[in-house]
Amino acid sequence: LAEVLEHEQDLPSRTPDGHDVPLMVNTGLAVDAVASLKSRIGGVGLYRTEVPFMIAERFPGEQEQTRLYRDQLESFAPLPVVMRTLDIGGDKDLPYFPIEEANPFLGWRGIRVTLDHPEVLMVQLRAMLRASQGLDNLQVLLPMITNVDEVDDTLKLLDRAIVELGEEGVQVGRPRVGVMLEVPATLYQLGALSRRVDFFSVGSNDLTQYLLAVDRNNPRVADLYDSCHPAVISAMSRLAAETEALAMPTSVCGELAGDPAGALLLMGMGFNALSMNAPSLPRVRAAIRRVPRSDARALVEETLALESPVEVRQHLAQRLEEWQ
Ligand code: PEP
Ligand code: MG
Image (cartoon, rainbow, N blue to C red; front, side):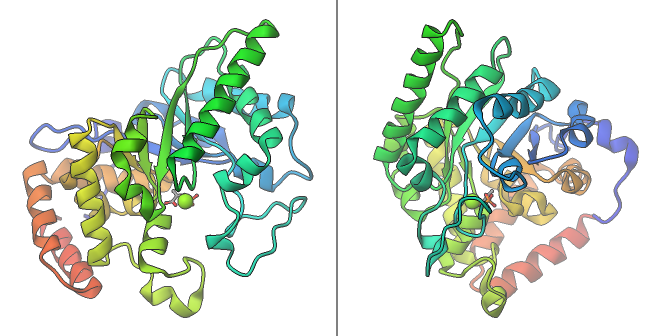
């Protein structure tokens, strides 16, 4: 599947047997470059709001954030833009908000930080809501959720932000809200989570790191970090089946979705959409356009029977070659 045809990039991401797999993009900065792809994508599956925060010199204020978010929402409207609340901590530090910990990936990260600083989260939610005025494409995504109380607490803040803005004369509706599935505990709470939010997005990068207990950035254990580990594949496959049974729209926004073999596996498992960095789109689209969904389903079954990460990788590489 090395060959990617340029004209094909304007064609739908549809399998030869007629199954559509919406492709979304992950964004952070540089809206303009990605916005030119608007006709080729289903929207923004993950806008990492921490990226503009990381290059700022202090927390951007409500007005400044509103401008940033408006830019994203307008550039892609009417397509959906999934904005993730600030996901700092772990490997993502703000120069003006240093977090020093022995185990940062198990520590103060994502929603844990922003729920401890509701004033930061409130400004961000207000700015997102303000930016969405008159558009109908904002979706809000919560990172590093570990339990349902975090979801409930965040929803209360969101509702408060909507009321506050209403009192200030800014009328906005409640956007769709989703939870990142990236902490393994969430895989066992899908029902409880699904009763609270509208969609799920699987963070395969962190899910891999936490399932395998391997720091995703530590070169000493880089060989062990592998989203093709059979345990990860098995977890993802169950996740797809269970979220489908719950009728919860579930997409994948980690790196696995941007890898052609990974994308075929995820499509075979039944995930609703794949979100990736823009440069991955051509090869993933080419793979989807060449492989029937029935074959992708068979690929999942074959892969689930394998026992080692190396075997999985070899098998996927061999299959991809056959599909050239
Ligand atoms: C993930 O964890 O897979 C993800 C998409 O989020 P991030 O890489 O920003 O942690
Ligand atoms: Mg993550």
